[in-house]
Length: 113
Length: 114
Image (cartoon, each protein chain N blue to C red):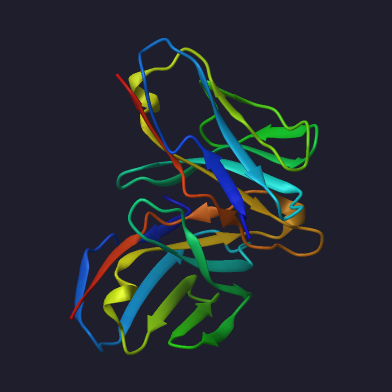
């Protein structure tokens, strides 16, 4: 079983739609959760960073972590064509239990004008 | 704000050749990482370093070597290039003193082995 599972998509939505992106994980020790956006031929760019459970909002983006279900989500409100990219989830355990980050395979999103 | 800089951006190698992928960061981050990204496979950790002079293997280290002589630089060496090493290589860095800080990535080196 992979440490992190992410539906690769592709996902195609009309401009203005609410987008929901999700990842599940198997390691209950994960405490730090990240979402990255990766444009074509570019490196991943950090979008959201959360610690433990709960919600975090930044503009049109909301990250949710449900540790009891081992499930994280990224919501994009009022989606724009500029949001078209691949979205990667990432997570890691506490620093004293390892130095690795674990990534999902990415979900490809296209927002149609 | 240069962040993480990777060179070269593109390279084609012949089987058996060697090369060094360069990575430099100007954020004074103590942690640095090398990943490879293959289609549909996500990011695989090759090597990482927690500070100058300290390196450790990741998930897929075979065929690669690294060194970390300064805080800023973390080169990745490919010896005897093989077609299986055709990939996009990303360098990342993070500052971790307390807790866990997220990684900052370079824009990658696209490497083809023919």
